Length: 374
Image 1 (cartoon, rainbow, N blue to C red):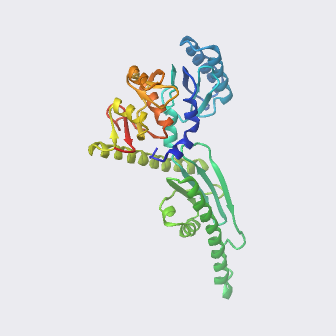
Image 2 (cartoon, rainbow, N blue to C red):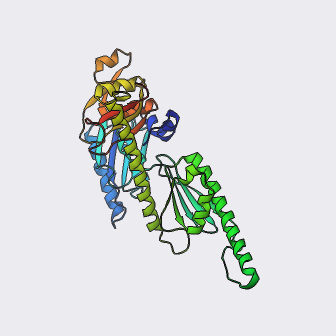
Image 3 (cartoon, helix red, strand yellow):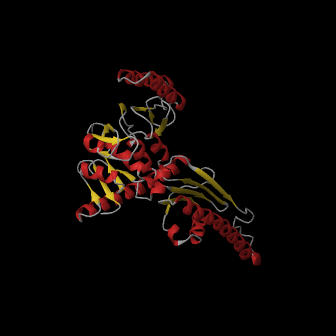
């Protein structure tokens, strides 16, 4: 996710940050949700029982295991291709997240902090965007905010009289055509007004448009240059007979490109700061120290299920260290967790943004940061 201000980050990941204020140890489990097979419900039941058995073997208390079991059964096997569930030590604070297939390999873990990097990665791939399905009457507009999979819908249905350009002949032909074009443009102007408002509210990285070419052109003409520059046209629309799945496949492809571009911009900025020896940290100790000082603007991490490096954090303070003695010297009670989870917690507690780097990209040891000041 591109860098943003602390308020923006707090809003996007408020639910995740709240989990980190609870007491551990947490349990985190990610499992496949096979909804496209005949015996999906049976497979889901087997997977839940397997996860709960693993948690019991890890020493999780019955209240925690029971909460995970209930959450997974409430969510169901059709919430996403994968489901990640997390619960605190008593199972009081818990959450479930639907993820697309391939986000992460299934896992079960019990540790002092939850493993929420898969959720961060999925939200990063869901950059804010608008989808506009238009015709000469109006448009269906779908808005997806930063890092969210829920969709806000609005519709514009304008004047329908005279929208079809007929050919009555004689002296009246041009008059009828002009009235039709005026109606199309009025409808397009109403759509443009809605898009301009949502552009301010959602701040989309891209506006995907599918529909009537003439209506799209009228709409674009009434948009500010800054909004019009975000338009990407794809085949489809909202007219009868449109292949909806084909349209949304095109939308997902455009959004994926926009997300990759946003991630690349963050990593390019990180490499530039490292090269200038300026506003960057790329070693474990430097990143943890910067997080403790509230100095991190963007934390950069990898998701590696096999990375078991450890670090220390203070439960009641946004401080972290590679050594427990150093942390105790700050007056915080030391707790140990996985390095990447400790770093993510520090970022969320201090309003820093988080970028999950792809394999082979980003910091050499899987942890880095762009700093707010040198």
